[in-house]
Image 1 (cartoon, rainbow, N blue to C red):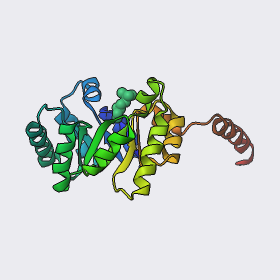
Image 2 (tube, rainbow, N blue to C red; image 1 turned 180 degrees about the vertical axis):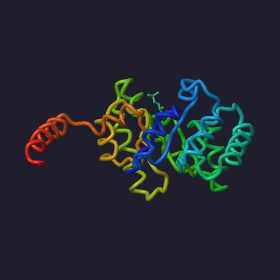
Image 3 (tube, rainbow, N blue to C red; image 1 turned 60 degrees about the horizontal axis):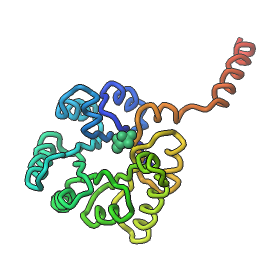
Length: 215
Ligand code: G3P
């Protein structure tokens, strides 16, 4: 069960990475835009922090350009680089080539089991089903995770299921329960994973009682 943070906010990532509970980071063009920084500057800071797995999206329009950008990123950032490509014919061609070179690829924008099957065939290290965006369109986002994980298990596929676009803490447990290997989430969702009202109430009571017995 690996937990990734889905953000390009380095300060937030540093705060949570220091807990020892975070295994990686996923970024995308929208998250980079929100950080008001250049993508390479964000990746460089994350690498310097020691993040072992950083998804970096390539958005060029041709296979040649996507491959060129992927190789540039791997050259610059090394082992921590995971190349993120969309689930399109070109994206999967790039995935196929990079997988042959032992470069990790995260195939993103997955909205169906069929797309996940193609990405696995292309040698993806990860497929990213977008749970929340499926739910936004009135389908079962978590069922998608379940369907993909089931078919991968039955066929002993090595590609891992990385559940993305999660909207709430409840989805995290469910995604793992349904077979996700990795769940990526905004920092707000990660913070809520610690929280339970009964923990707060219990702690309050124990602290009060401790005051009376400690001396
Ligand atoms: O990792 C994909 C994720 O960033 C998309 O999330 O909330 O924009 O659907 P969202």
